[in-house]
Length: 182
Image (cartoon, rainbow, N blue to C red; front, side, top):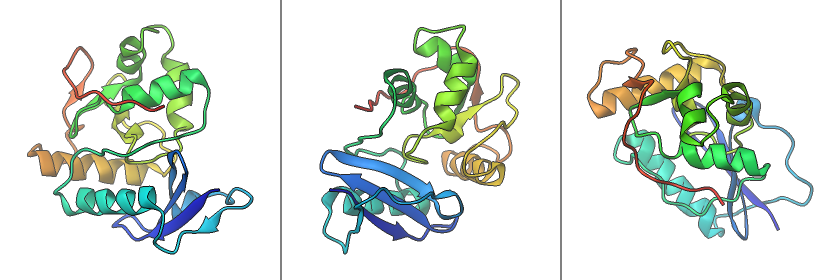
């Protein structure tokens, strides 16, 4: 059974959706589609939703920089591989689509990586907003480019970088934390 709840954020409402295996979705209110059939309002009881809400509140308060949650996004094996790699991008930094493609061992697949990035159902927690064009320019974002800019500027400010400076853009190799999406 799927459960959902809405939470407020500086970017508007966020809908969280989870099943028994973990968090399946974080979507922006203005982009949230129809709920899956049978999804029920949480009422504060689902542990994955409660923990996701707590960690998102810490993130927006500037006290949380990493998420440690059971994730269960639905997607192809390639998409899940990309989403797992997204969790390796350090807070306050960005990678290009090409860099992300290289990180998953598919250096010629920048466009496919972009498509998988766009299909990411778990906004913010699986940080697809940290992927930019090869030259550091902002490219598409499912929540809207203004939200992508806000998230990058917010993280840059929290990390001590100048907002609007592409948040530590890294085209080449960099070190990052590991993370996985099952």
